[in-house]
Length: 612
Ligand code: GLC
Image (cartoon, rainbow, N blue to C red; front, side, top):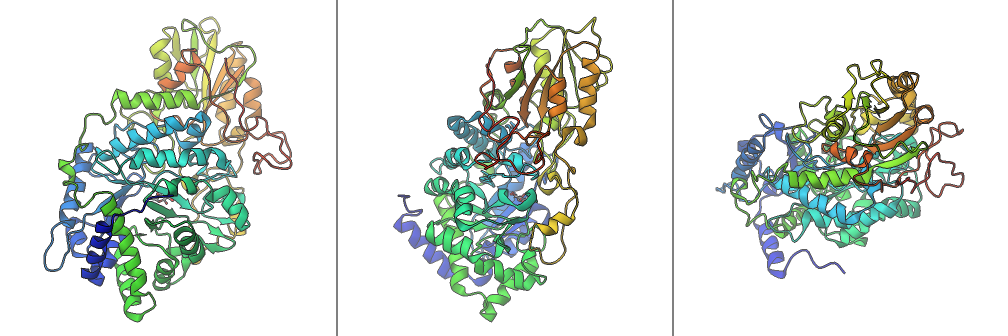
């Protein structure tokens, strides 16, 4: 049985605060704005309760010190009480979903799909603990993580944010990651946020923000189950999902947000919307505001137009279309979380223990990420036993992802859509840099596409192939935008359809340069070890057939060295697929394929992974 969030005294303090607050102060607490849309003076004037950074939204040169300074300014404004403003500490939120990934020099962990393959809950907790410290180093208190999506269709652009297609692993991880972040809600802790409630990974055709058509039982079995341990572990916030369920948007779904999450599951923290997530509820923003509040959302992530939001909600309370009780419930929840987290007692950001801490991006932290990389790799093929490699081998390294720390980190890294090249990812190692460190006779192709391979110089080639970074809808695979409508997204108003990543899961169609590189080198009599950088299983039959060995490396993050550790046998392969790998030669290749399907014909099944 979960212990109550607050002591009796704390509850009393919340009740007293709520009774003394003006409507403007209450509605301000319910408002979260993006940092670029508000300055400290406005934050105080409108009593704003939270600020966030969207992906890639960073102060100045994106240094740790500038983050601390920014947060300190916002916090100071929130605590400057006067006749009009009541001192209630601001809480700053960020997408630190694989380390504190926005900030230059941070330790960047493998994305969740790789962590699912490592199948190591203890490691997951350690990753969360390190992530919490690197978040605190920047003066931030809250991360929108962990994602508990169960991705059922790899065409979804957010598949890599999911630990697995099956709730089994996600359920084993959820509470551990929350405990790693929130700990004892003390100096080493940040506030966690499980997301996206509910059914984000189950949309038709894998359309991001689309329609999830499932029975209530299936919705619970697949997409709610992983939340239960996290709620029992006392996660303090839940983020609403963009998708619709049975045709109704989650952001307006009173049954899902209030009846199930708050009443049935007794969630006592607060519910935050996703980015402008109520906009889709109606063609009229005024109506959308009431729909979101009355459905049970407590805090609203309103990226820019926070002033109309405040005006509309104030109007609704005055008109009685939103009750004062609902407002008081939302504000009580927000204050309860801030109180439970000790935010009222914490010193200002610049005076906190971890702010500007030297452990940010430290070797100690990076070694945890390196271990995660080692454990995430899945060996799919090694027929000629080329692996493990001898460190003296005359190696030829090629492929667009061989020396590109940006590509190996994937989306939600420095920028929302990720980056390319090595300049933006400070610290860490590319895959090539990791190989070069241990293999003195390795050379990097000058052309990436392997035309300079020379059988008189090179005995074996490592070709690093795969996807380039993407995030959310821009990672979707769609063979036409008409299917977005078929997905029944129930989107009112203008449909913001982001450009898709491609129209097929076939690697040879998405990136033909990869098969070209492999075959060019093989034609010279040099066997190839292929390493795939991807946010999901792809259709790789031709590349697999042309290669002598094949490794799924997912999106390993900043510590590419971890891949060399395993390729040269210092660490054995241990990763097992947490996603079924489809066979490009099967008739339903581009369709969802999941463990337990009646017709289950994967190229490599869930749980597959070779070892040395
Ligand atoms: C995005 C994502 C959500 C993220 C939020 C803030 O649209 O859906 O996962 O936490 O906005 O960046």
